[in-house]
Length: 274
Image (tube, rainbow, N blue to C red):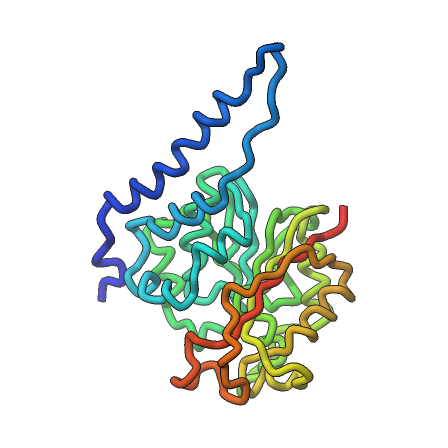
């Protein structure tokens, strides 16, 4: 089966990419002043970068079909990724966000697409298919547990963990889990550059729920995640309700058809202190 058969038209993508093309000219025109001084660069247009990556015609149709529920343009704008960045994508799964990260960071950036080796049982050949024929040349796959990340100290501009922190409590048959909880957050702190960001998105459990919901329902109480991030030394700098759903049924697992793709999801942005 060809997973990348039908694409959106190049016209749609060019229209979105045109938003980005305007930015350098605007910044250049703003650079000079009457006194010969150089003005500060114009702010990065994260919304335009996000829109262009979502409109990229090379995205697989199966990814695009999920956009309505996953709101990638809004999530990517919140993440605030820039060209040339080094990004570690924890629990990349089949690569829904990997594809768009690759587009945003460009040829001067890199994405480490991390999944625990034990995820091979769930992912099959999906990662190999996405990366086949060097179609995402700035992406490399890494198969490690969450407490042994494949990146040098202080090397990453952004670490993202999309729909993942609850997995630290998931212990499928034949595994001992995917890494020590506290050590995993410590590893994120280790690989980030000072002042850079750690973005977390996950399915919310009801307030006060135990950690075990990560195993049974694939959900986690946001308070647990916030406590662990704070204990690791991270500073919360932003949070968003763009994927919130107060009508979620918190006692249902996230794969139940009644709530699948419609869960209440929390989105947090942390910073490693300078």
